[in-house]
Image 1 (cartoon, rainbow, N blue to C red):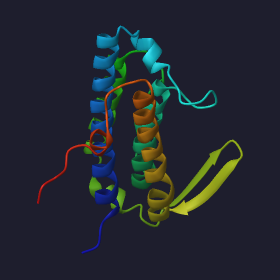
Image 2: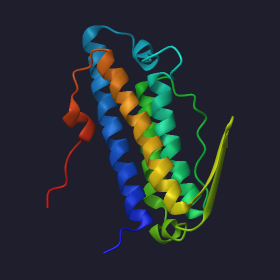
Image 3: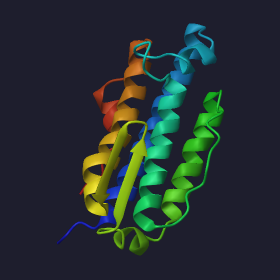
Length: 171
């Protein structure tokens, strides 16, 4: 059986966002227990030229919703990237999941051969929908999720590989 674009995208994005939500909960608990100002943790970064934790969450949200938008040809919600608290980031994740789960899978699947063109600064590329999902959208999404994980881990949050992997579906 062939794996459809909708099954390769939406469930992966939703699962990753739920993992990210759980990681943020652990980060918020850690900040409270360690007496760390939440904004300090949300502003933490791995390197000076990398985005902070809050922006990693925003980019994971954007990567998932814009991927589905590009594949489906529909409209994704726009968020202002102005979240400054754990609660606001959790709401953004919840809003992103609501959007993803509301998109018709057939519309995503119809984007398999749709041309997706990207232009960010000096980067530009064109893909088929399938190529875009597999070689750009999913890797980009997971980059931001794992970077958020790494920032939290680097800041002393007690998380490990199983926290990043999240719950498994038993068969």
